[in-house]
Image (tube, rainbow, N blue to C red; front, side, top):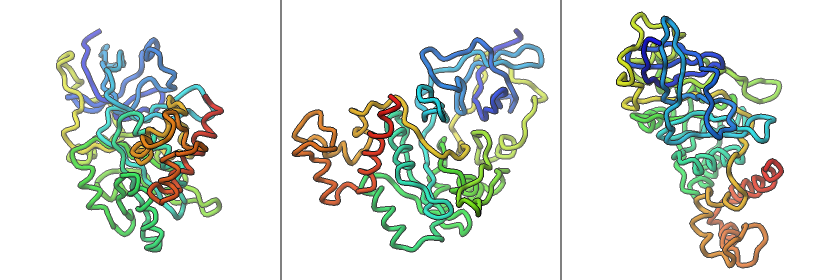
Length: 332
């Protein structure tokens, strides 16, 4: 082994990982024996991870994953007991939604927000394609999440509305951007930083659903290194060196993690009894419930249900809560 140093994961393509360290962008593979203790995750190394790397001649191997400060996770498709970590070491997350071409369900948005609350990642909602919507529909959507305490950024990747606000929101932070296929995640990121080479696509006319354009989660640097991190990478001319004192990518700039579109967002590691804690508007009033273990579904003197009746908690959010209790219970 020639040397060991630290790097940040910029992209995971399955068998190869694109990493960044003080010497530049390069590719590495995973040591076969590397596993995270006690983890049921299908991906032991994820975008945003800081990893220890061994250099052996012209090859690089990921030897260990350093402790994560947070991450966003979802249930793996058709694998009820396994999970998929989307990204790690985040300052914030954005869930991008659209109400036309395609329509994002409130439940999808709420599952993402619940996961962020549970795993310690501040979240914000972006309503994209607002140029396709009547004002009353936009106002209603903003009201639903305003009651819950979430900021909603109104944007259009085609008209440019909200792009400046979004750019300021992203500035100086590492942000995960997620949403259904076709909602315009990549288009919005490209509008904020036009120099990036991000694939974008149209919505299927036959089904009204988005077609996948982002194949792998990728971290982009929205400044002078944009072209370096968004293009196809190869071994650097001067490989990273300097042992563990070499510096990984630091969040001193603006970093965005663009993710493949997902159809669903299954919860993982959240018990039914604690679900309401991750709805901020429910948590704020639940102390007034008549029972300490109130499920907010049928009990008398339930402060949450009373708040829904008064319009202080959006009906759409409460319906999402009930669906999560019902649908995820069978997977536990």
